[in-house]
Image (cartoon, rainbow, N blue to C red; front, side, top):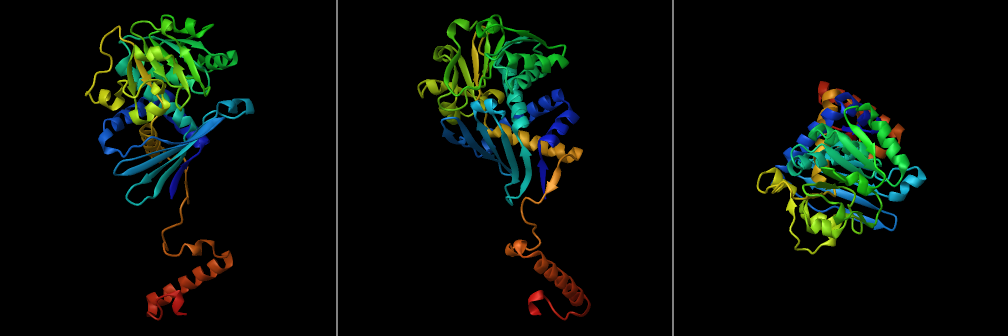
Length: 368
């Protein structure tokens, strides 16, 4: 059987563990897997683009487990009462191909994206960073705020969105964390002024310039999350040219990230090298650092692995027959035989099995 986690099950799992602990443990799982970088079979995601959005498949595997995620990005969906980003994923055994887990990944993607952002900032932001500008206050924003609060000690968020209702929503949801102060800003420039970290998580599928060079101050760390497909950016190209840029998987980020605006030989550093100590993160206190985050399949592998272990440990989710049982692997057609015929055959097989055990008269149904 395959463990199935739908949205109610995942909600129960996160609440059961608690958001801060979930984010912390997920960040550690992601770190552990990035430290095994050479063990993974990696590729850029497969994307199907349309004028209104994108649908993607994201596969990755090591010697034991294979994982993939289905995910979309449709910025106009909110006008139809639908989420911009929706996802589900599978974790399977490499040895047999057997699916171990089928899980929602809409909630989980928001959590793993925020956990990844924060674990990278621990390597790139200046020590003592406490103020973060949060540009874009949509579905991902609370997760980012809480990850930085939990993992870095950020205690002040300066929030801006072109939709005031989105900021109202953010402030209402984060009111349950009184140690995290949220201040509404009137513009991106006002939110960014004096911030130690700037997180951009906007949704429009456009070559946008959310951050311009004149907004950037020495020592800032920029967590650029929203630019994640061809033709979609958030940073002015000169912001990138003046910064040290860290990416997840260069082959993918060159196509989808903010660095799509730059020449192919513009130097970037892959995250696994920083986490493993093969490359430094921040080189000096005044340096501007950028995490050009597009989301990579390895992070989904980590998330699926983590929630699978939690679900089994806590008895959350249900087991479903996603593939036929292995009792008669050469008889696939038997799965769709008429119920009456199947019942008769099963009954006869039981009787014949009894006869064979007792008297050795027949060896199979086909002998009758």
